[in-house]
Image: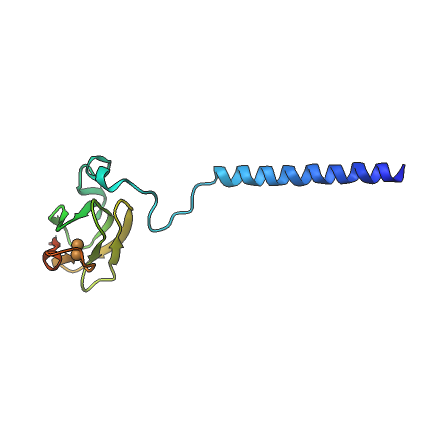
Length: 154
Ligand code: CUA
């Protein structure tokens, strides 16, 4: 009799245990993925036809707040020139449609590697007017040295 009670108790514990595992697995599945540098991957060949990269450009999202959707390719960036008023915070969203490129704005803390099809983010507030070059700092081929775009801050 005692054995039967223990057996029932054991079975109940097992059921509870499985239930807990099941519920936590379900909860994990439902939880939003933790956001890192890249949220998801695009086939590099599809970058030019995948939103938002099908329409690279600058768009205003608030007062002195902009989003810059950009693509890096051999050998340049799209758009190849952007203009924002001084004091603007620019949120960059950028991917590469071919090989690994870099994205460095000398004189700022913006410096990242742009992997093909991976979406990279950086944010910078341009307080001082001037011309800010964006340079590629990952060797990507013959014209690597000349790969750049410019952000004009007025
Ligand atoms: Cu792109 Cu070096």
